[in-house]
Length: 395
Image (cartoon, rainbow, N blue to C red; front, side):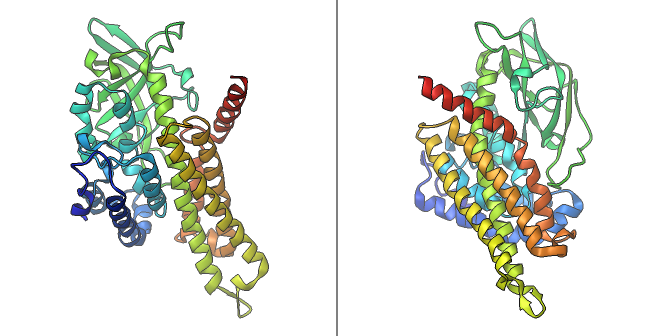
């Protein structure tokens, strides 16, 4: 599979033919190598080392990083197709390299200096470095404006103090992309900066792994910054006011990706439901022949199809820059709510068996609940959509 993933390394954009090969290789990897080991991932709360190594070889740690920095260079329309395949299995797989390609890596891609990009992006794309997006705090989740982590200038250095919460991949991270307030918001800007902080920097303490409802194998934890000193070169973009825009841009792009991931998981839940309905019997009759079961399958299918169309439309709008505000939030809102309903129906179709551990739909039911929370809750998405609709009408 390695050779397939490197076919477009010398071009500026992945062709449709090459992307078809990448997508096929990813689908094969997910369905033949990862799906059979989902229970192992769940039981051990970890991605097996050989699966991690294969993902690196395939270029999955850098699929959305530009090719000039060693990545595959997929745009968002291609990213969402890949995400729909990755969503078909344990969400811990995607989480393993999600921050490298998504909210952490895209901060560097979009806002880093040339020196910062050359220093980090190739290592991120290869998987040598795992990057973590350190934004969420105990008092600042979906609204970065509430940040309390501070960065104070000391000579040419910056000293960072604060606490971050629920940080994905923190126990494994080599690099933290840290958002901190350098001053109160004023007429010059938000006063929110973002820094590149190597994990071994003195003053960083990573807490114990969080005990979550689901998504076993996807590790999160608190991260404490106690007078963490970094040089001026660590300030992303060389500007104190890049942070808020970098966070909002990376999160908006990430919302389309999470929507696509939701569609992939919903497809898996639907497939499990159809297979069960066709084979499980009640009184000698396959339950799929009962009209009320068929109605549940129909609702699942409709949600999946609507979500897939919406994700593809939102991704196109992002790439051609016609809508980078409403469409990402609408897709994220609809698809993450949709997958929750599809997963719930999957348990219902399975009956009592769907409530048992070791049954895929039980894991899916727990896993997808988080999708409505991160990259901005469903409530935040509604506010973004409504606010921007009104602004659009007032212009």
